[in-house]
Image (cartoon, rainbow, N blue to C red; front, side):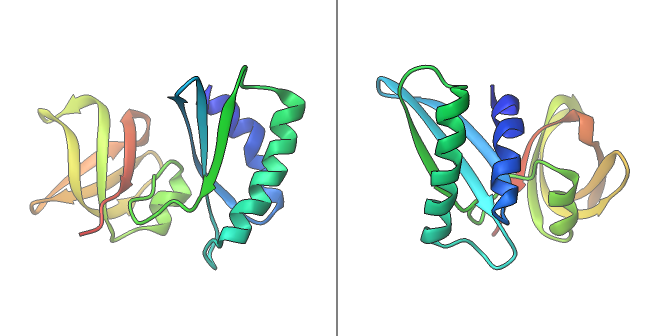
Length: 147
């Protein structure tokens, strides 16, 4: 469902000059909570969130991808933002990241360290002085991990 929502809503958000960083859909009381995280270079204001919310609501009302009641929230990604696309990783080279793999590598699934490089199909994260080549295809989730 998350991927379908990303495909549906990303063009709407981008047409307004924002990047759709991530989408979360979770149970909330009797309905669901749909949370969108948007960003752009100049930052995101409350008015920006309201504009995106109105535009996205129109698409959601027309397409009805979520059955039943739901609450829509739009916000900025925050300091511990999700890294979902290759461009996200490239933008935050040198920053401290948390990466969780789908399957263990070298006996571990979680890596916290400096994002050193982004290659065609891998990233390199330095953890305690050791470099780990982590394949994009093996990443379960990743986000910034500021100090």
